[in-house]
Image (spheres, rainbow, N blue to C red):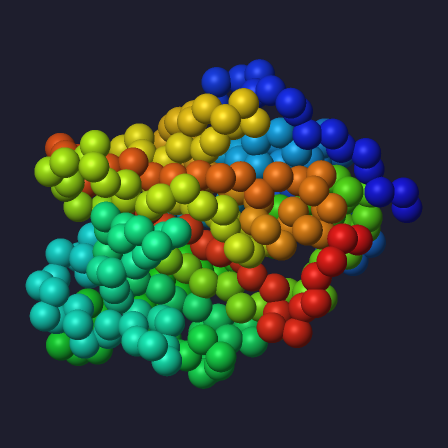
Length: 294
């Protein structure tokens, strides 16, 4: 096939990224695996959002709302624990997985705590280049934490792969063109907690950056903090929408698309009167992936 011609906009027409119903892509007869052709209208909407904003929100994704609620509850319970307890699973120089409160983005300390869980060669149970997962043990008294996080991880990965296939078709390629790059994927799920900030004008929860992977699937609590930089250089809110997930393209997808898809610069602002939780799932390809424009 001929690669689709997608020209990124030179100005941002809407005040915020679009909301896209992807239910035509996740129905039992949606295609997207093998040589299946995905719904063209939905693919076109995703293609245009990737080319313009690099950000969009999805509904109709098929992730159970009650599961998301359980995931949020386990996340809150974990971050409510005293720091001396969370220290038991602190990440280290030779293990990138676990809890931390000293993250840097562009050499600036983030106003947040985090906990990372990731796949090594497609498995949550292997040790690899990034280390190994550190699950809370009996001392944490969180028996539902690990099974809940594992279930959410699997669902986020499912949705991320649906989106990758739509993005592939949007480039004029078969929907399964990138599948082999993720059969031993190195994706990770990040649990974020943003505490109250007494001087939000002096701090950012996360400084401006792009995501390094292929696609990010984000769930966020109902506190407006996430902002994306538009093609006009201005900052635009990415508002929380109940039941929706926020999607953005990463550097890998931007390279694969030869710049047709935009890996957007985004940031998270701080609040002095509201705490916030979020969880991005970063879909990353296999360690062996040698990516270049298709």
